[in-house]
View 1: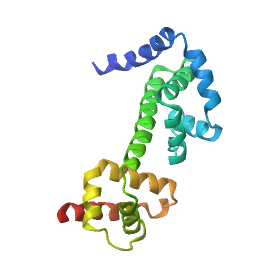
View 2: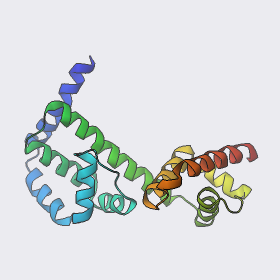
View 3: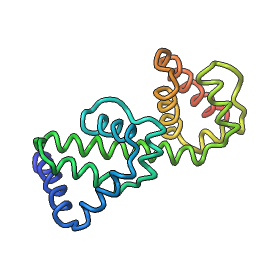
View 4: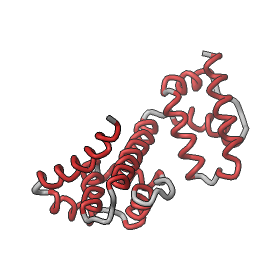
Length: 181
């Protein structure tokens, strides 16, 4: 059963391309609107499985919209040179990039700036305390948002060399807030 679904995804992509008469025009508009640096970053992540898309480029990608993202991915796949297994992996990574960028965006939109500073100081610099009200905000946003934002900051903020320490502090903060509230 799993094997059948593997072959259905590329067929779906092909059918989508064939049925969308405006696909070429949309792809051209999307390409003109794409930031070159961010375009390379998304291509490296989706097609070459290299690196993550930065917060800045996630913002650019979200501005383009999901339809542009999907159209550009589909056009590159349709241009050829990929086996079915590669196409399935590319589609998974494409969905993953969009999902991650959307998560970062939705989590940031709801983050209280004061609490954000308290959390960053505690998790990334080991300084200060996180107030009970900010623990409440953190728990309200949820573990997924906390994990996404900490991970994004590690990758974008130059914290790779002490990522383990940051993750430990992040987990400790979450556990502490869970017991306080």
